[in-house]
Length: 157
Image (cartoon, rainbow, N blue to C red; front, side, top):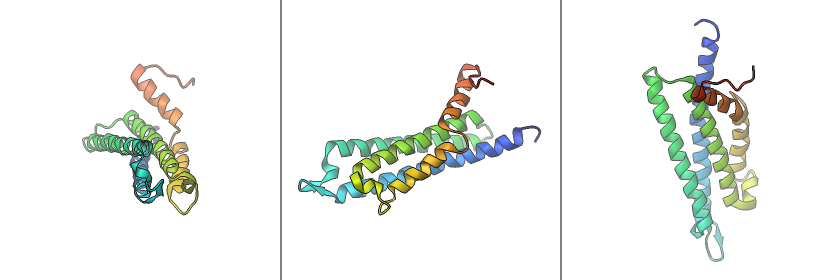
């Protein structure tokens, strides 16, 4: 491969893996928060019976499912040799943000227990903050996708 094509293809592959990995972290947070909500008793009933807790769990499972579908379709395009770097950027950007938002909701469901290392939520959050930074930040991926959809470069280079 000539020029930057080789390194950029490696970057795309790494970003694709991150998009899937973020789903795994989100699933871990969701599963833990769901189990916790079914076992934690407050006011003589599981906190999972409260509307706001259910709303958070529903948001998490819905967003995880959408992220899975995004990566699944992207995988099909990769298998066909038709995946574009901009699509991979979109998946990395979306899925990491979704996982961070989901981890924050899981932490909220666990209350003060969500910030201690007895539960995996805070570990996932710290890892996701790191993942959010490497292989291109959310802002960089926004510029990549923005350039792709408008045809206009906002990088200022």
